[in-house]
Image (cartoon, rainbow, N blue to C red; front, side):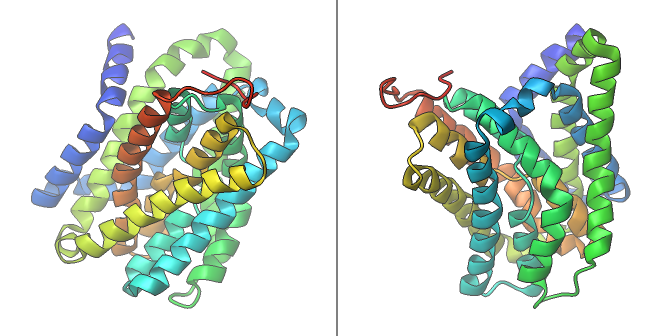
Length: 318
């Protein structure tokens, strides 16, 4: 257990390097990770179970103590990222499969790594955790509708199929994790120490599987796909921060909103793309998995070096 905990810390520290290395292997030696493709939903389920087992009642208290802040964060996430995705698809004139993939990523809930980045960047961590949890719970209801509205012009959208799949691979594992935490209590804390490393490995394998399945297409579409993903992510950070600023939030809240808007659960995007659309539609989500951890780490490091005026900011300062 101690070995796995230490391994998890090392993997998290060099997460971006690991993802880039796995992506490179998948591109150059596709057969290495092709075995993962049929079981992609299983790997995502493990990640979601890990999220559920770490959730506590305290993580949701912000919904009742600061409902306005949580609402702003969740609304900003589900308005900004889908809209930016759609506009980029039109401006860049993306091919149909890539357009569907970019929109799919834009409609995903917040990524779990955003909480870590918020902690490092001295943002409002409690708000960040709550926004991420609420956006994930709402995903089965909001994602199918948003994808239908924005990607329906390119491809037929199986709205009920998407709803059931999101419930199966996101909500059910999270609920099982929460139940396990309630039943076993302190015993789960040992597992909690190991789960970050397990989740990191699962995310890396997801990326490797998608890159392997799309190795040939990646060589021809990489430039435009990478450009779309980078712009999508950076506009998410920018507009998320500006949304908080326009609505009069303090600095720590603005940082939390920015990270929760800009960072997506791209693993979910990968799984849904592979299950309902095409391997090529999973390319943007795979690239997003790599890029948003690099950009998020850089933004968090920048914010961590900047002092926050306590008189102007009443949020949680880490």
